Image 1: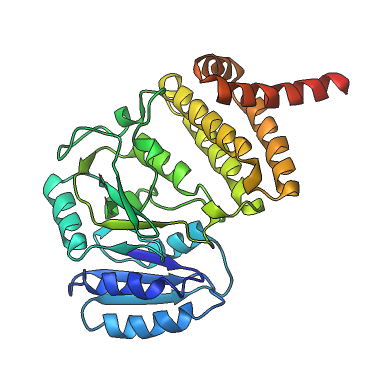
Image 2: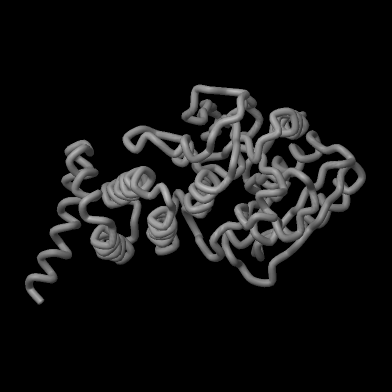
Length: 323
């Protein structure tokens, strides 16, 4: 299990306690501190020593902050296990969950499995499920990308909600795009579903995902959040090269548009200068999309989102005409 940490001294003890409650001698925990500036490194040093009594532990500290994607890649490069999974440094596991997860992927013999999770917001708990009804059977990952107009497995992008066979790492399918500060899971999950051979959804409920953390990038409207554009540009570019692009690309375009509309609609979240960048870069991104597919998407989207996107599209067209 690969667990990146960054400035999470308040939450790291709970995360580490949950690792101990999942430990076995043949399990490996790779703890990666992404150059935290609080007490997180000291907490991890103590925990690594204590955990080594019950599991295999590697503790790595970055000399400079690289972001979640880069920290996960560091963990992947160090990991030795046959099966790999992730956990974020402010989340936690139910006791015994890790053993159940390994048993599931071993028993099914698939490239990867996906799991449901519990979202924890303060004291509230809610269950988020993988948007696939068929459970505990081998499925074709490419087919799970579609249909384009519904939520599918690629929209459930959480890397920590599942387990992955080492052969995917050997095939170059598990590394993240270095330096992405947000939406790092999006190109990653699309690549898995395009190129892996088999997967399954299992009804295990053991990951607790902490929402509303003040330091989380999902709560901060600064320039790092704009990396979603780089992430979805990558999704569209790589999917356009796929032999089945005619079928798969409309889903990528529709998802990109939905994410742009979501961010543009949430103006109060952003610093004013960053919001201006968001609109300008989103308008440019819309122009880069295949325009015939974009037209189809806008015709079938709800009025609120399509009107936001049409205004952004006109912004570039008007600017070009004026030039």
